[in-house]
Length: 243
Image 1 (cartoon, rainbow, N blue to C red):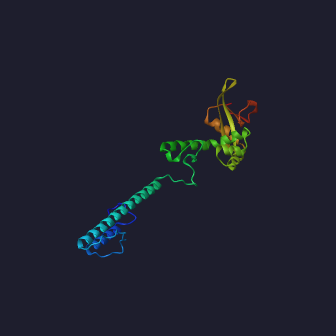
Image 2: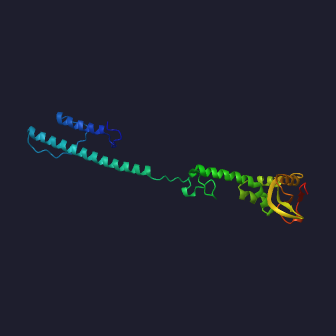
């Protein structure tokens, strides 16, 4: 047997050993062997003597060995060419008709072009923190968009949420804009403004105004449902107990 990894011809080494053995047997014992095809030989010259027969037999064996060597060389060349074709096919890029080309792969978030395979720990942390902030702002964004006249399906599409989520926010939440005032003599001075989204319920505006007065040192709070307009159009005006 050959060494591990050695290339073998389509006709194994054992076959050539058998051929050489047959040739040796014919040469030593002058016995015909059907395994080795006889080649046409030139007509022997007339004459007798062992010298003439021995020379002709030696020429036949030499020619036969030369043919076997040539055949083996040809087969080895064919095997080498076949092996080269196999290697080329094994290393050629596979064409899968069902697979999309690499350039058309869709990331998890196409707008941000985020590739999850290349995401680092720090980037993932920033994205998760941003996600939490976004989640807390979604109710306000929904209510603001609805106040601007945008339909629920369009809001859901822009925020990547379901329409049922948008309808639930519109049904259960209310957005107030507020302003905190302080008393300066006989006049009111605006100190701070903001907005809050709370559960839609009876007296939700009053509870929000009382919380703002309690948590701050403001003297008055004005509330508007939705965007802030004029003071006269405020939904609620709540003055602190000191006034």
